[in-house]
Image 1 (cartoon, rainbow, N blue to C red):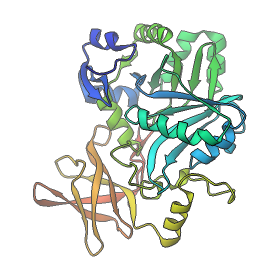
Image 2: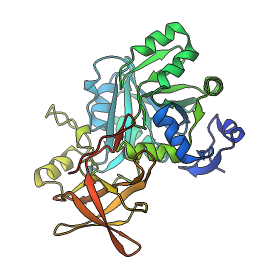
Image 3: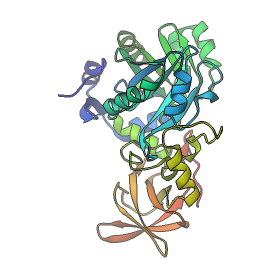
Image 4: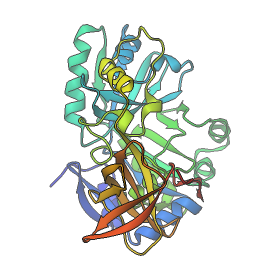
Length: 363
């Protein structure tokens, strides 16, 4: 038996298939995975992501601490509510975790992955020893993600005119406190929508209110195909402690300026940047029948070999897609070894799909 979110009984009541995910009993689907996927792409769906870990960082050195802890720079968060995506690195430049951090004016809020919770908290507290900060886990908080082109409209129907007017002005990667809710216009699907951090009891009320508005619950299986279409990494698959952000299509999350900001892993990344990265993360599409899967070998004629890190059938595109870590110098075509056969694939830019439409291009 794993950990359970406050909504576990609601998932059971909805007929969810429950699986272990990072030590949590979570719904992988409530029926058809493809139908759930398309609900989010075409209308709206809701996810229970309360297995994620909420951590608040406060104190006189909170900003300086996070500037040292994270590869991205929280000094960019000029206004309260603004959000930043970043990697938390080890000294070798490997990714301990990827996360979102919010500036909540007098403190910062981080949301980290459930599977890395224990090591994340231990690392954060170890690094906090040299700073005047308090690192506080918030296990009493739940998180609901409401995603899709009609997500904000459906939320507005629940919260009333005054709060709806505030949410209407919310910009991407910005959050705001509404009573005991913290609502951020963020997500993991490549669609518009919000993520709501709120107390557990309030989460059950919101879940039911959304059900009453015909918002469908969506499982982890569709969440994975949605994020892969959106070109978003999954920790433990597309990057981990042995992989630098430069080899995980996360170079844009590294704040090199100002040059005098020291952050954990900076020296290793600078050395890699100077020497030239040997690997990159790219997109692959396969028009022929079949599904691309993690760990399948990618062969680039005259260049070398790589490996698929995440692969699936794309419900939006109607064919297989994948993320693959390959040698620098890859062209627009490659081969994937599937059941001892070499299948041609096209190499494309990421993401594959954004806001419901194909947006990739040939490399």
